Image (cartoon, rainbow, N blue to C red; front, side, top):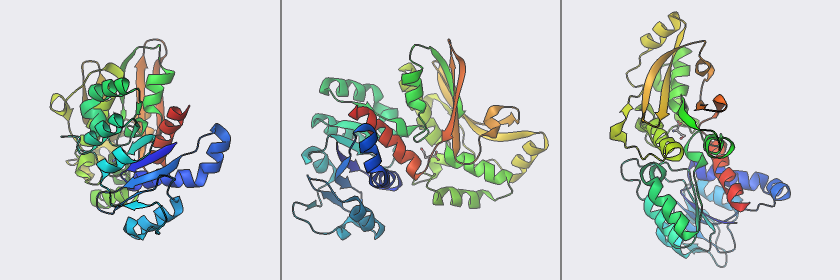
Length: 336
Ligand code: HSE
């Protein structure tokens, strides 16, 4: 499977590292081989080689700050813009992990159109296009005979989407509720341990949990984007941000955290999605609630179903290899 990585930050590099470190294992296990033929960054260059790029050289070059440091080899093209790379490369799949824009979904949405128009499957980590244009993309993908997968957009590689749309098929899901932002959960957990908000946010950024602009995390918008994706995927309901109550954690103080502690409670940023709508609200929950035990960058989701009752999935919600794995899991599915 030839891959065009559009976006090569934490997440794209995470996938590249997995392909490098587990390539032989994946090939032996499931006959899967992923060759990166194209890489596009916004400000650090682009590369294309129809026979595949060397992953060690790619990671070394980006580690030095620019893909210009990739060695000159015969057949290498430098400097095509992302759209040209998508259209002209021989990739089978576009793997999109550029920054999420929840207002326009651009430029990622145009990348998706270009990928489908040029006969490529799509695997997304970027939440924008799935949140804002899911129905349109699904229809375009159907017409193009291509697949669009987005496991990495909600709970990184923890299979929240695959659980709902795959294993739970046949059940009717009436609600999804959980903790879907790693950065805020990490900050709230560290504040319970006595750390300041600013220090905890700094750590969440260093761990690769936070978005490029962490306002999206602490303001609740990242969680809201995930709620919209779930609403699209579970209920075929294209919610808009303005239809939702969205509150983040920016107003929660050390004193609030302490007050909750004193009454045996914890603050959590809770996402609720039902066929009627969705919300993101900081909520004080008792320690007896299973979500109270979900700490640090970990996420959790509970699906309420007709046949099984509540089904809860707990796992990583952010991070380099964790989100890289989300992309890999979609690639493996496409390759089946
Ligand atoms: N910024 C997000 C989080 C990354 O903290 O959960 C995963 O979408």
